[in-house]
Amino acid sequence: MINVQNLTFSYQTGLPVFQQFNWLVEKGESWVLLGPSGCGKSTLLYLLAGLRFPNEGQVLINGNMIKRPRPETGLIIQDYGLMPWATVFQNAALGLTIRDFYGPDGKHAPLGAVDDLSQVEFWLERLGLLDVKHKYPDQLSGGQRQRTAIARTLAIHPDLFLMDEPFSSLDAPTRESLQQLVLELWREQNLTLVTVTHSIEEAAILGQKILLLKQPPNTEAQIIHNSQMNQPLFRQTAAYQEVCQDLRERMLI
Ligand code: ADP
Ligand code: MG
Image (cartoon, rainbow, N blue to C red; front, side, top):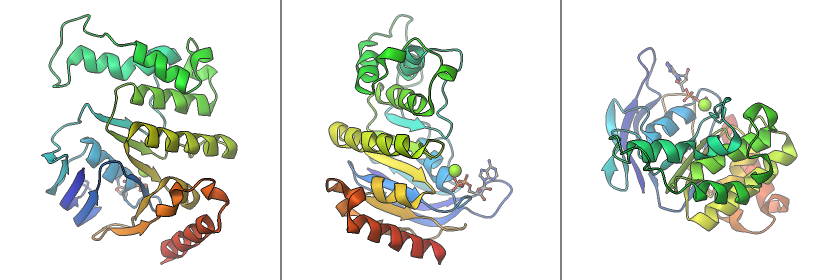
């Protein structure tokens, strides 16, 4: 589904973050981008999202070169991007409303084209947010805010779901329950998932495959296969501990 070919990318000011970098993602896989701060995780996610563009090489999704953000790509940025002046319901409806208003090709659609807000209701219920749907973001817990961002993203029916450090500011029990929720949604919705994290434990839980990035320039994809993450109660297994230890050692190199 995702084909990163000979990617070279640098910001105006610096050395290349990626140089002649290649990476492939199959449809329906759950990938984690793992690495220390500054290694280029967010940069790669933004390149997939069509918010940054290669200096050389290309990013293909379903065979098409990314020249602008795709309407079928759902992106959750690091601080969730909720509008403080809008309720949970309005925030959750935002992606759908904007897309229907402008149309999938970015052209202006007729006013009133927004139809299926029942989708929003569905996702609020699925994510346990119906009770707070008239509240504003500053009246919510961190977990509720993140679930609102997830509801907004899933309401547009994404085929590709990108998340940048989604749970890093949450307390441990909330983080773990949201990780489980994301895995459930991944399986249920046949999503292709790419999650950015600097947490080894999170990578081991969410990543069927883990792309380990190093200090720039990244020239080669280092991939760790973690197929055992699909087993029930993986967090409690020795296999989980082994993957964490393996990642820890690789990150020290
Ligand atoms: P990560 O998400 O892994 O912490 P980033 O992708 O944000 O890393 O950053 C990768 C590198 O690019 C870092 O060296 C960072 O300082 C640099 N960088 C990120 N954003 C910008 C920007 N807007 N302008 C210039 N350099 C940037
Ligand atoms: Mg980042």
